[in-house]
Length: 356
Ligand code: CP3
View 1 (tube, rainbow, N blue to C red):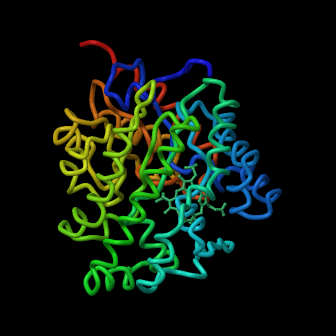
View 2: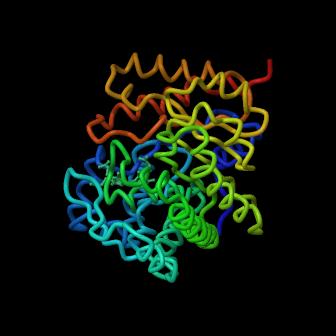
């Protein structure tokens, strides 16, 4: 494998000096891009796109053809593990994910406890290998997974939820059942991410999209503790070069010291968290990734440039910042606005990396 030509992203995650702030955006390969919509149409549906390595590779690279991003992210979904566990994943147009066999009782959990889902996920590792080959060292490739808690919410609710009635009922009525489910998921996710590293992933991100719906006590026990187990496993996995780990809990802004104490290399911030406060609180331990409000991309070019500058100003001078949105880009964003964002980061950020 060729050496990385652009390793700004990896250096920033390791809090090493960089010439400018690296930038990528969550969901950078997605429906806002007409070329993505065309490939998905060719695939027939979203899951086929995920499960066909050549197509997953194609859409992974699409945003890099348009914009000067400093990282690629594997095109896949966090729900590949529950799908491999036989829960019957379906994505219907405009509705989001749905499971035909959600987890409802202890028998369901016994059943999935017997499985080795990563044996069914070879298509993901094939995609990682193919993308690395095609990238040919241009930029690093990020692998990812959902957090145990976030996957459990989809597996128990059977779909995206607003109130989380079923999983919270499990939490407060039958906590041992939830703990068992989370243990199974922690083990599967550790194996899944380790296999992504072995296939060629050069950084990893854990998406804890729904950690923020928990109380502090419940977050620490049911979301952060299972993520800690995964971080421990990944840190034990010996690799030739360090593979940095990013933890992102949406709505996790008040638990940053606990998240940073897991031993992860970087913490993702949503746009409700002040990046200057985050830096003051945990910036000595970890790098920070974020955190422009994704809806700012609906604004004018001037507004986008001003808001990009504000995020850079708030982080301030020095190492350990990866520019990103605070959550995934939305499907109705005009692709030209992403170019405005990337250009603004490239124009303004070198000043934050020069000696005083
Ligand atoms: O960032 C990237 O470009 C890589 C690809 C990626 C996707 N999903 C592709 C996708 C990543 C990293 C994810 C993660 C993911 N998936 C999360 C965590 C991040 C977050 O947004 O909080 C979650 C919660 C999911 C589950 C999921 N997948 C939902 C709820 C949906 C439907 C919501 C929606 O936006 O419609 C998906 C579908 C999905 N995953 C799409 C894409 C590009 C849209 C599917 C389509 O093409 O119709």
